[in-house]
Length: 217
Image (cartoon, rainbow, N blue to C red; front, side, top):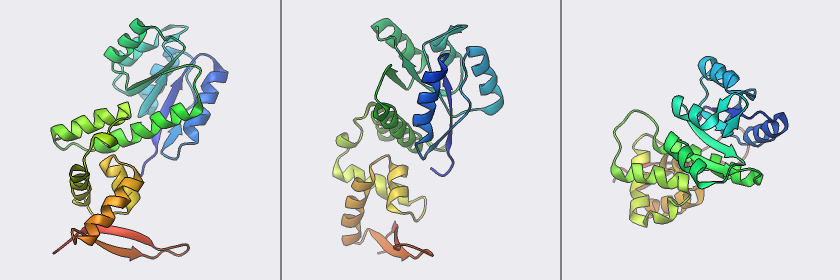
């Protein structure tokens, strides 16, 4: 993913909002907008800045954050101290892609952001999707996508991603919704069998980068 994902934190506690914003800003795939303290501010920011992702508290001074998610056509994750089952069910019904109970470790949010990036990559563009891709996207958000994909299926994902053009192992991992280590392992096997070709791209500094393409043999 080449364009950073614009993210809006919606929380009335400025200290909590700044904390969550800092976690997001440290992730290389994201950039944050100034936090919104109320739903009114959030609605205005959504209208003028069109963020890619909302991080929303369940309860705001001027209304219901979960209801806001349901009424807004923007991907959203709920960050809330509310841990009761009815609230969580309501958030999922409203379309929340994730739910973290505050307070949480920074790694929990970073992990969820990682999954969201992979989820977006699998569902990128306007093309039609196979059922396996839909299931993989849902599994990524749940954190169980990679273990459920067999080796042959993983190799097929990689070959499909290479159909979109030559790429590095990191780019292939993002396109396929798998880890870089998994991509590198399968790329090595595919190259040995002649199913992909490898060339080196030399930059101005540092070590050359391996680029992969579908084999011609």
